Length: 391
Image (cartoon, rainbow, N blue to C red):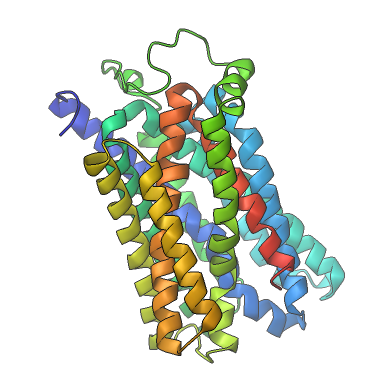
């Protein structure tokens, strides 16, 4: 049940706000995870080994991680709406430039092209880092603390839909057309949602002429103005937020190692084309598991643990450990496939609780973006190791 009795006008305006914002973030995911679908194609087209492709991955994830940490305070200052618009515009531009790399014959096909694509994809990641910060910043002003777990699950599901779109559409494009279309199509989708965000999203209820909502989080009753000193004190001196940051650093190894290399693993080890029915079913199962994990985490956290996030995150980590043990031992292909699906479930539980929900709770609506930037940034910094390292 809602903590306050919302008016019909408030519910309708909030729905328009979060649906638009959620779908924008969803298509931003299309413009972020499309690289994994072009991974094998880049090697085939240019004769690159996995380490060279991994260089592009590591450049992007490291820049994302650093940018998220430093862009958090900036997003808290300018507001989530502006931050999302900045991020979407940059993502459109650099996805197009990455795809255009295929037509720049003067760059060649060797190290100079690797440097070009690494730089462009790192720039895309810089702008992508605004998206999660913007989403959490806006939602922190529209949702009471007691309902954030469930709504974080809804947003997590919308994100997974973007992932499903790029796995499905992108896999088909990569298998049947030139690899650059995996970047052109998401750019168009992001451009459309940029326009929708500009038209319909507002930072807070009061920006729409509605009463201010007391969300009763860490910012409630706090008279201090938002500034760099405030957000640093609120986030970087809190042992709870620092512990969550360390936990998310560990999540990054598992999440990005799987997400960046899974399509190529299926092609080279399991000999499955990206447009095959088997790969598509596997991809759908992984996404559905991610959605289920987010909903399970949010529902249990809000209704069973009364807003506590730690027990749910612990359960998600335990599931990941067990799944990784199965993959390590690899008793059979079926067991490994099930472990991949359950691993997605566990990762989604942790990610929705820590990056998505705890950042709003402990940062408060005044410093939510800074907390989200720290948590998400640490995850991507850890993930940057899986590029060159796993390659």
